[in-house]
Figure 1 (cartoon, rainbow, N blue to C red):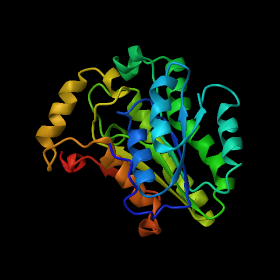
Figure 2 (tube, rainbow, N blue to C red):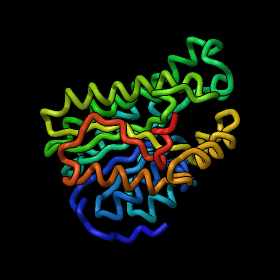
Figure 3 (tube, rainbow, N blue to C red):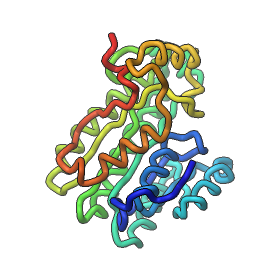
Length: 258
């Protein structure tokens, strides 16, 4: 995908994008879109295994690259200590979620307490922690984004434990929008339709979910990572300066179909 700047409406702004795993990641689509609009980037990678996949992407985007495993004490704080060396932070994207595969492919009734708490910590509370650290650096306001899914609002077969977790994430976005609004910081949950990412591949019968999305969405096609990135880029500009607290669907209209 091209990284050429098309219009530098985000020039002079810095975006943190958490959750890039490879070139198919939603987070990478966000990074591409921000960079095309002129933003400077800081990306994170999970661990040494992920680094060879993420480093070339960061280099192509001219992005700062930092390690981040939100389960490791101090790593999230270290990212924001590094960001504090820059003059500003304007945009932050949280695109990480996790539950053990066995629990993703079993029902909610069979989800253990340990799994539920871990999924909630990584997929939801880490966004709250990120917002707490980001807010002091957003001295001129800013935008925070968290990635959700329609299974937060309605039952999606086989989504199981992640449904309640994403519901909590969407509620957290609304409450953070309320708390951070006086600081000029806007918060949105972004709800993409199903797309072929590494994380989604862990869901049971995911290919059937993709086929169903194409069959039922009014636009009749799947979305891609740039559709999601472009939506976040728009919401990060002054064109959307009075929008906050929303769950924004990027799914070809699938969410309106019963």
